[in-house]
Image 1 (cartoon, helix red, strand yellow):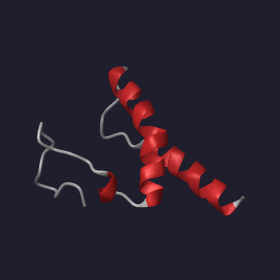
Image 2 (tube, rainbow, N blue to C red):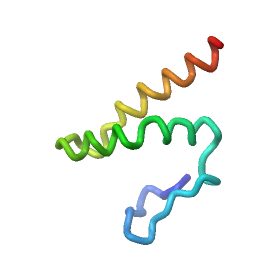
Image 3 (tube, rainbow, N blue to C red):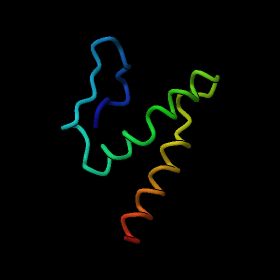
Image 4 (cartoon, rainbow, N blue to C red):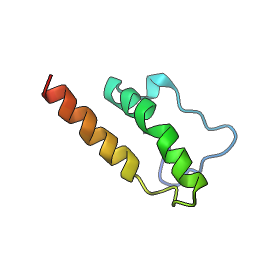
Length: 65
C-alpha cells in the first residue's frame, strides 16, 4: 500500500522500487509514460485502462514464453 485511502499525493510523496513487486515494477516501466501522456491529453488520472492493458500483456507474455 503506497497511500492509505484518506491520504493525498503531495510534493513529499514518493514511490520507491522497494514499494513494488517485480511484476509491479515491470508494469510501471511499461505503462507510466503512456498514462501520463493520456493525462496531458485530458484523460481522467483515475483511469487505469493503460495499466490494465499492460498488466494483461505482461501476464500473457509470462505465461506464454
